[in-house]
Image 1 (cartoon, rainbow, N blue to C red):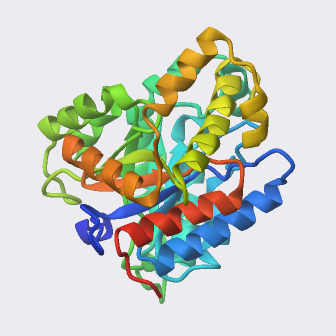
Image 2: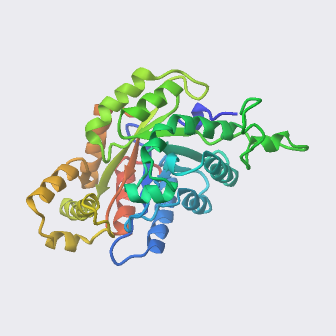
Image 3: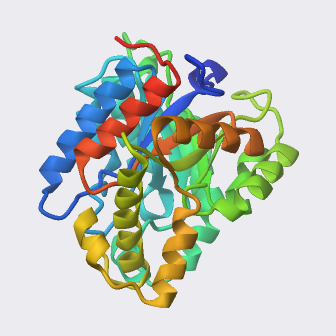
Length: 364
């Protein structure tokens, strides 16, 4: 049993140049709680479904006060209970942090909850700092986890498909829910298995995804300089598989639309200040625009902010639409996955609504 291309490829709606999707970091703003952030995630997921966005992914992060997405599988189960159609997935699960069997069980459970709607996106980075990664993995040998990623991936896929060969030490171990249930007396085989995606911000996962004939997701939102080289490498190395007969690549895009351009600049400045603090070892809640406007940036911090915001598509709905169109032309991405980072959940929700309106996406 494998995923099919129909479960991977999205459908374009309205005047969008390609399918549009959502990447949610479940950001927590100053003065807000994780409960507030998760309620916003539900509202955005419901909006995304009603406006025909293709999929909704959440990303694994750890030890970051402003990001409440440490447990993607738990959040996805919650979102599955509040939606009926939109694809839900991880963007991604950081596989070296986990035993492959555990991930196969978690996503087999999600597939049972939301049949035919679950994506399993996998990355090899820790999604956090080195000390936290060591705590997650209970080892200080962090490079080993990244180097072992291809073997971990192969093991996970074996568990998902329940097809370890005879003589393998895991031959009699089964991920449940999963295919083994169909071989039990009275068992019925589920027609679905979560499609596996590889995520990356460099060439490693691009090449591996191509060699295995898997769909690929590139983190343009924080590694923009590597986007085109990585997509080229993926397409050049692609080998047709039982999953895909030709490459399929989406890119994560940081984009924020507001009702006026000035407000967009205020919002992205606050998000950039949050990144300054994260990159300098001071992670915290996403600051308010007022705090960001009052903050005295050092020359080095200002240079970082300018560089960071140069890759954030922001402004009015028309400006964001134009920026997304240009990015699609430059990269040829098969899908654009939009992440809206702002202090307020209402601002994030409004941004997706404005983008949907700008492209004339269907309304419920």
